[in-house]
Amino acid sequence: MDRLQCLKKPIYLISLPNYFLGFIIPIYALKLGSNAVEIGMLFSIFSFFSIIMRPLVGRWMDKRGRKKGLIIGLITFTLARLIFLIGRSYIYLFIARIIQCIAASFFSISLDAMISDMSSINDRSKNFGTITQYSSRGAFWGSFIGFTILFSDVVDDPFKLIFGIYFIISVLAVYFAVRDVKESIEEKREVKNAKIVFNRAFIKYLMIIGILSLANGITTPIFVIYLKENITKDLGLISLMFIPGGILAMYLPSKLGKLADDFGRKKLMVIGLALEAIFTILIPFTRSYLFFIVLYALIIFAGLMRVPAQRALVSEITGDDERGRSYGLYHLSLGLGGIFGPLIGGGIYQYINKDLVFLVEGVGLLVTIIFIMIFIKSDSELVNRDTLEI
Image (cartoon, rainbow, N blue to C red; front, side):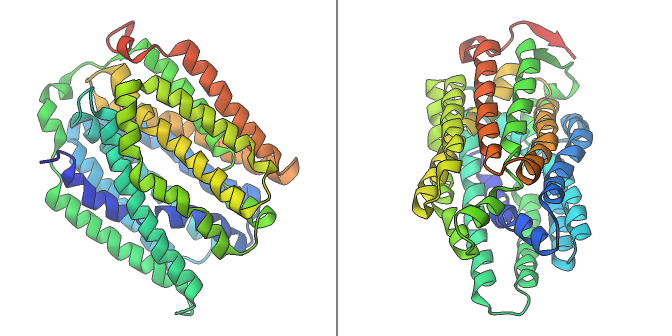
């Protein structure tokens, strides 16, 4: 039986709102009278609380278990969706984002550590890709539900119905996780009391991930706003732009993860980043609706190429000791970069130049590649070299 099978149903269900919320939050905030900087704050506050939560969560999880962390994350996600259901102001969005951060801290670290526990060096990237596929499939069909209700005018308050459905589905995700998910740390009991020993490359890797997260975050709060102002004002047409990329995310991650396992994780990460940088820089030169759909699908493909390898490298660099803490620090670095990226992007977009944000992100991704080439060794040299106790 597939060792990841117990995770697939709760991951699929809890992911249903992901694409829709990522799309609608900037639009909804604009409707409530927010500006680009305030929208950037909705994304930066998420990362700010990550700094506080994630190192503590990772260490707690090594002692208490992955399943408990996963359940806490799912329950807290459910609470955040309840806030979306009852709230109708910017302050409710702000509070919901804070609760989402707490949820993501428990959920993402426990999930990453659990997948790593269940994997070997030969299939780790593939397994990360497999779970990403189930998450993407849930998010794709969840967005289909959300946009169908939003644009069909079947009810006076579509958001209430949409968030009500998401809340109920989140409750089901909690139920299936409690019933089906097994505690993966039982397979590695000796890890609980181990003194953590990091490869020195991991410290450099955390710095690289922070830079990457900052670059990726620059366009996050303004992406849909840019489309609305420069490609089409029709939200229905904008939502259709994300379908090809969503389909790629439903089927490719496990295959690209296997390619990373076979070809080399560092190589796939570099290639993916290079393609992502080039396609991002091309965005300001795109005004055709159809061409933009193709370009955005290529950006998604590039991201799918690097992310399974990027997550698997954490275990390959640090080894087996205290994976919860290792992934906690990894997500901390993502959060640190994510604080400043949206604020920088929102500021550039509002006060300097709306096209410049994409050039800045593209250059940031290219700089990340340079640091990876300089500081990260090849896959075969990573584990148990130049160790540093922490």
